[in-house]
Image (cartoon, rainbow, N blue to C red; front, top):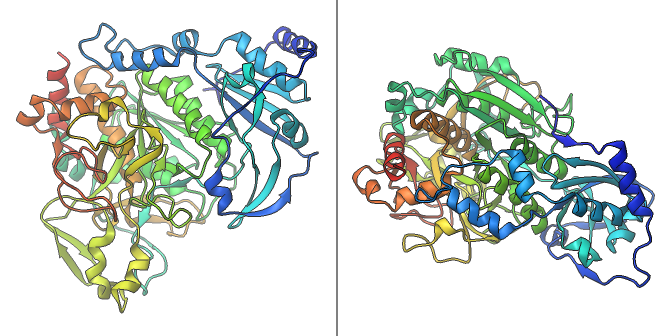
Length: 603
């Protein structure tokens, strides 16, 4: 498998580009257009200015280009998922998509020609033609984009960032969606939570020899996946992509599957490096290895015969962007899960828009793309951003955002020194723990609040993306922005899971790690569920949201409820209520009914 699908320009094409670059433009100075949404204002307001970036330092950055005929593309995607349309499930191949909607060679030359005037060299063009990689000095970038590049510090991270929106000639600006890597800050983190730091008596999570929490078989029973297994739907002929910023040890997943008697048959697991892959020797608390481990273990358990491709990229803004471009443009996996993200307001809006364009291609190709909605409840940017906000990429309208629930164990939620009665599945938010502060070694509820706020299911309304077509109707909030999440699954660490991980240098120890949770578990398990549903339906569900929301509003959902109604719980701002809500979305699934309802709706 190639590291990343890059269309390297031939020597003839490169010579052509350079020839264009040497041509004098117009004698008069071209009119400049300001490219809005390319400054990370929220981040810079919370950072300390260190001074200008050295103009002689060389760097690599990417230019994301717009799709052609974008309104036509949006309408085409809607028809792909409308059972009454002749386009229904007529998904495009990557080559067809690029031919129909990709930027043209002339547009690529146009952008390349402009930057070449300043000595900024084109390095590569992505296979779908939407990403141009350039190399130049910061001084050249400042001249080309009419910006100042400055150094900032945020926490321990020193990064470069532009302080003004770029200005370019209108004919060039109209082609560009955004810039990747001008702001080098990155805060991507896994949506993983543990119970390790809640008690005064224990400062770290330790490994054990015996796993606790929900087994894969118990999750399959709780969410009615087992009836599909009984019909021999096991995820066969499906491939799940795990999009991650950390590596893992395959032997850990194999041990996990063996312990839980998961028969993987001939299903394979392979690593696909992106931008060189995960840096060798990078381990420890911040590496995120446990995240990749649990993604592989849990997705491969619920879809035991699905192949898994683990796409691994460096934890950088360019790495994150290139990660998704690789998954989508290679189109080797029908389903993707990603449990990494950051508050949508910490990056530039143009960065979010550019990645969203990639997800549009995935929808057109029939890929089911799942992302964790985050573990900071309605306050994803806390403590940097104090107002309610949501996680990206979960906030993309072409992603199925997986939120979290508390699924009680035999009507109880176990906590130190006792348990909390809970009869039904709740929306996950740790506010329910507050009255039990003494069990965790705290003397006051106010003191305990500081430890648990705002942990819970990520949810709210996007400030970046508008409400998509499938969220219109009387059952959904009448908001301007896209609402998150779409669906949910058990994610509370107190009703959580075990992970088998022997990665060196982690704060959890090595072996079985108990008390793990977070929407990091919801996303890969949803990916496994859809792989099994695809097997049962003998078809690709593809972009899941249009079908899931259509089922939710259909008569079939009344007869055979596809989602468990979750009416209790909160994420510190939004409350669960009957119908759609911004804690658990449509709810957690009854997979057997959901599959049956989709079949009835589409035939």
